[in-house]
Image (tube, rainbow, N blue to C red; front, side, top):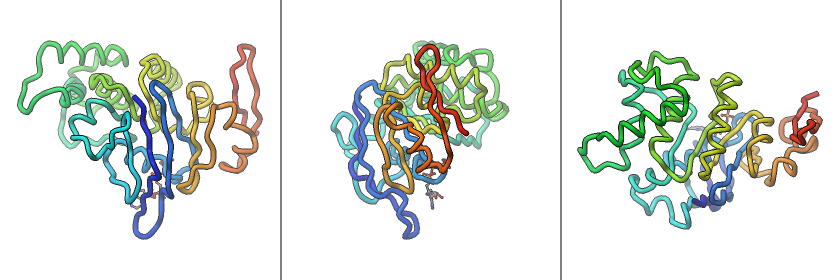
Length: 251
Ligand SMILES: Nc1ncnc2c1ncn2[C@@H]1O[C@H](COP(=O)(O)OP(=O)(O)OP(=O)(O)O)[C@@H](O)[C@H]1O
């Protein structure tokens, strides 16, 4: 599925946070959004996953304007792993993942054997099946993150929106998550802080600073010492390992 944003503008209290963002992710592309803290990455993603309505501009899923669609039909197309997941109720892990099935059900339709099978498979994929009956709120931050990813997988959508998905995860699970997301073969838009993760996994990268796009291209095109200095005010060197993979060293 192709996701496009056209001239997205968002302001809070007379402060302009996104100053006209136009970007797109082609079908099955993994697109990273990088940029310093407060540059507007989460705000842009919130407009895409529909928690925030931009003051101006629009989001299109395969050419269809997001707000012209029902919430149920956009939720069938796009799942989200957001940065913070607060639950006031003590749902079990299985119940949280079952929520991913909701867009596929009619009102008051009960979960069936197929839903439970999809949920079990999603939990296995993120290696959390042993936690199915645990209360979600008792899990560690990284475990919660993997359960929320399982919920997104159970939603079976052709696009995933991820807000710093490797936040909270140890290196094993960071790699597991990115390898998994890459293999899903769906459209992914992800905010990413770790530039080496962005370099290793993204097809394309957008660079956001102060609510403005400052760069776009493949990791090799975008992640240059000049751009890193301009955006992050840090000196860096780009090296290539014996397998030809690029790495960013911070000096
Ligand atoms: N509801 C709000 N009210 C006021 N200001 C907000 C609101 N939401 C976000 N902001 C401000 O908008 C700016 C962009 O925030 P955003 O969360 O999009 O940045 P980010 O690039 O995702 O940052 P980080 O890397 O720290 O997660 C920040 O200065 C933030 O304080």
